[in-house]
Structure formats: structure tokens, C-alpha cells
Image (cartoon, rainbow, N blue to C red):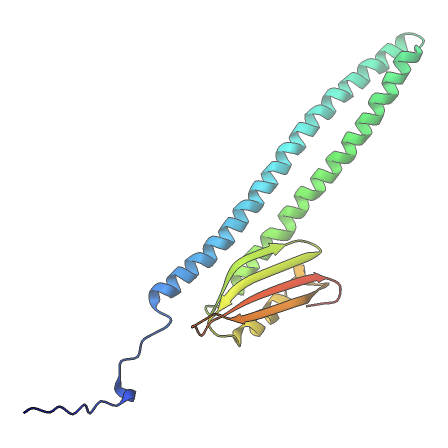
Length: 198
């Protein structure tokens, strides 16, 4: 009759790694994909604004040509009441188009100047232990959602985030951290609003 004695202690059992190379690579790819998709979306928005700007500019050019024609007609003879009304109406439309063009140009400039540097800086303050799953950037309101394998790294990332010029004047109105079931990771959600500082 054979008998076996297991001399292995639990300390000698093989250790299973929770953070495998495959998970780490997929996490990095997810973060880079999220940031790239945000950058492409901003480029698309900027392209849309550029196209709107070009269309409005063409309409403005046509209307300015009509105004010049009316001015020439008015100079050649005594203006009729109907012609004067049309001239004033066109002048009013031209002023509205100029205001709209100024607004669109300002929006295009803000989109290029504000969001692109923020996305570039988010890449610089990236941490291996932390993945962003979604984010929203607005002048009055910003929000971030993500997962971290080490909960104590989230405040350090927030400290890096606070140093960005874009977030000056914003403060966190909501910070939620939840334990992922059966994992050592935590999910977090941050909401920043205008007023105070982060």
C-alpha cells in the first residue's frame, strides 16, 4: 500500500499574474484608440466648421456683389422706394453673414487651440496603471471615466490633470470610485465644472 505526503506549502504554489502582458497591451491599445478617436472627431468637427465657413463666405461674396450692383443702380438714377428697401435688406443680411462668419471663425480657432493641446498633454500624463474608457471636454464642463489597477494612483493622476492650463477655473464636483467585482481594480468617474480650481 502506497502513501503520499505532499510537502508543498501554499507559499510554494505557482503565482497567477492578474496583470498579464496581453491585458497590459490591450489596455494601452484601448487608451491610445480612445485618444486617437477623440482627436479624429475633433478634426472632423474642425473640417465641418471650415466647410461651413467656406459656404458662408461664398454667400457673402454673392450678396456683396448684389449690393454693389444696387449701389451702381442708385448712383445712376434717383432711388425708388422698392429699390431702397431691397438695398437696406441686403445690407442687413450682409451684416448678419459677417457676424456669423466671425462666430464660425472663432469656433474653429477655439477648437484647434483648446482641444488638440489637451489631448497631447493627456498622452504625456498617461499612467500605466490607469486607463481612460471615456472623456468629454467642454469649456464649462469636463468628465472622465476609467479603470485603475491601483486605486492610490488615481489621486496622482488627478494632480497631474490639475496642472493643465485647460482645467484652470474648473473644480471637481463629483468623484466616484467603485470596486470592480472579483478584481483588485477600481472604476472611477470624475466630473469637473467651471468655478474654483481642480
